[in-house]
Image: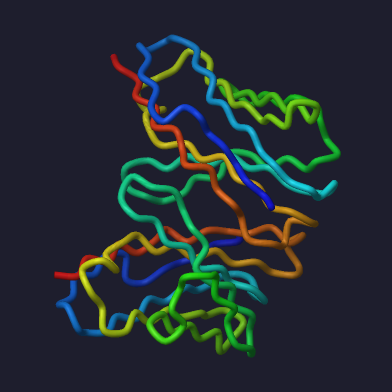
Length: 116
Length: 115
């Protein structure tokens, strides 16, 4: 149990276009989802915290108008990278937390975004 | 503020050697959780262990063992008789409070096990 999926696993897009990444909790209700970003050979850094039905909370330095997060249901959160640029190329990982799972967090497999 | 330091950037060992990955953390909370994750080349994070601040017992799971020392704010990870499949980046992470806050990760240690 406690599986989190992400789609797509890899995406290549052209500079200036927008890309949507989905994070789904498959067998539990996720009241909170976290979005992390990992640049090559670096650590994971928190981008934002997303609670179901409310606006996401962004970390300092993360542009909320560029990285749109929607957590419309208890099993789905989406991250849309708008007007993507090559410097947005990164590995994006979500984690989900459900109130019934002792507040444990489960990570998705990640999405590798390459902007050309 | 919370912080996790993994001073070893890269480690290379020969197969069957034991290796210890260091992790030092900083937090003002008395309640917190510590984690270790393995990240193979595929990128997916593999959960290894979660330990809360009130449980200082060391843990062993097969070839893996963890040494939690609150006195030195360390949570070190030892792999015994390393294997090539252990090659990966290992992250130590901290979550303050009751575990429902986001994780703060260390910079990771890249382990290469050579046959």
